[in-house]
Image 1 (spheres, rainbow, N blue to C red):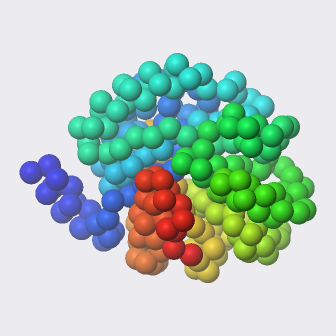
Image 2: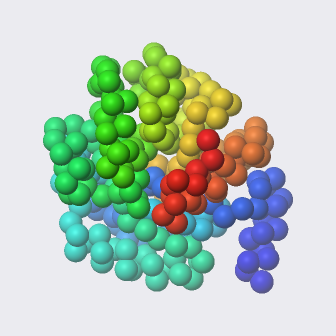
Length: 258
Ligand SMILES: [Fe+2]
């Protein structure tokens, strides 16, 4: 009965009725600037499941100057508690991380000291001008040969990519994947991020869309972005939120659709 209700609700929303996967969010509590406590974690999880998400990978910040590294014990305990809720919502949970590319991140990732999602590393450039390094594509290729694919988090929000969108094609040609924040499509992060975000949708440059949700009160904006994307392109909605993130979530990044 519950399943039927959810299907009908989504059919009425006009969004394709496919399982959605979120590979970037700050669902875990008290680790970074994400959920404040376990009640908020539960609210985010329940809200995302209600919007159709059937697979969620928690990605707290790693190698970030403002936050300590997540502890293994705390992460495991939170995931165990949240899995009990997720099971009742027919939603799968995994653990990952959002790695800031600073200091010794290359060596740490090569040595397996930073988390990946089945060999896909979600990486972000520091949010300052001139932090996207020349020759980054060589690093992308080097990691590829070691079995690690770099998934660049929200490039549309970064000033370097906004100024030089051609870099996106260059990095992608060498094997990088590009993750778009849903919030960018609603203009939450400014006009330049919104323009580049929609450009990535239109041209097919984006490989994955994700919520990057930090707080439960952002759930209505997630829904707004889902509706906007579905209204613009059903094909990209399915590719960016179901097919491609689903393959990564299930450990098959080689099956991504370009
Ligand atoms: Fe994030």
